[in-house]
Length: 147
Image 1: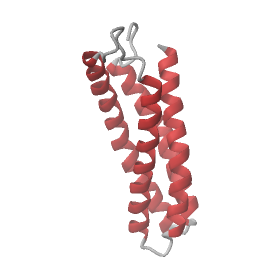
Image 2: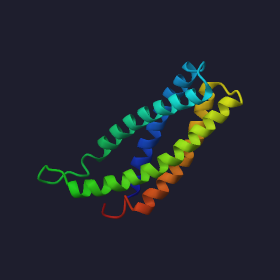
Image 3: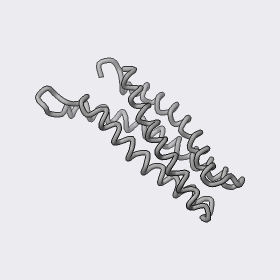
């Protein structure tokens, strides 16, 4: 059970690391845009990178978990776990998006460099995201004993 939490958190942190780097670059490249546009475009890029990396890593770590001895897939277990994961990610993503967008916009309006506004807002938002996600994963019992 603890190993599953560690894998999930590892995948999330790697995905966030990739998205932080790309988002900072995009924020700087778009520094001539209005603050709200820079923030919006950077947040969109953040999501594309994050979900691409996270989905790939999660798949690689979980593909054997749902294999039956016959070689097929335990679709009932997969569906149950995906519902719990999507619920947990969804709740955390809403919180993350609001906090990240608001912070980056704020930092841009007080004249932070765009790359720095992106990095700081994403860093703070990631910490909040990790707390919310781990609480909701615990509440939904995604990794309960025997799962």
